Image (cartoon, rainbow, N blue to C red):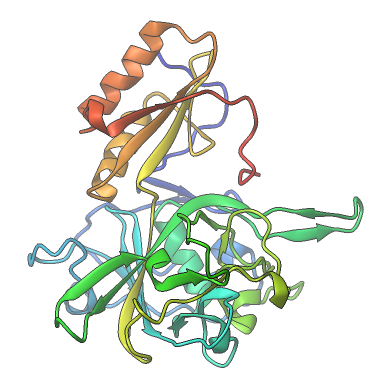
Length: 352
């Protein structure tokens, strides 16, 4: 049997744990509308601004996009202003408009009157509510990059991995398009190529009086490290203009002011590691054996291209590996969707 000694968490939408350890049990497919969750529940503020009540089911159906293009009714979702939440598929969809920056980028998405000249998407939703929406979809926040005065060293950003996609109506074909955000980027270096980017749910820092920093500074999704980033690029990325890596790709972006949707969702590949003692980690977090089947099924549902990246630590018995692979198969991952990766003994840099 697969075992675990560490604290277990659910990666799917059943049990959500906030950054302060607050237990939020998601209400799965209820008849009544979900109750409002105040921002103070997830960032510890003393007197925050109110969060709007979610619309009724009818309003949700009218506002929610058709993420899989099936033409059928959208899934039940909890909606905050400008945000649609699909808990079943662990997707946060944020209404936005395209920008056309003239120079290097510090951000993917920002709020109005902040750094529109350095971003490709303008978001009017409150960053604090985007943070809340990610929590409701089962993502666990880390911390933004910061400077440690004691050690005089920089600390890299941490948090659950997040993919960023964008949906828009192509003005030429009049058809809806969905693309990874990398398609809208080009490298500042003419000879460079945009790699697959790894974003993290860092969650913005907050001021001593409880104000959410990103609500004031507007860093929703960042390419350079900011303390107010809700979602940041993994690793160290300078804000120095001479070191900015990316710019907007005018050949692939729609015209400025095009209405679009930014989609925050799990990466295609769920990173699993089975330890010598039988414990299993997913994206660096421990998963209890009884919760693993639901976590695997939730990931298979999250996207059509979902797959497993499996690492087996030295000393793991073949029977333990076979048990885990069988659980993956039962969740809908055939052998072509399971990648075996060489083991590493180092802790992921994007884990706290």
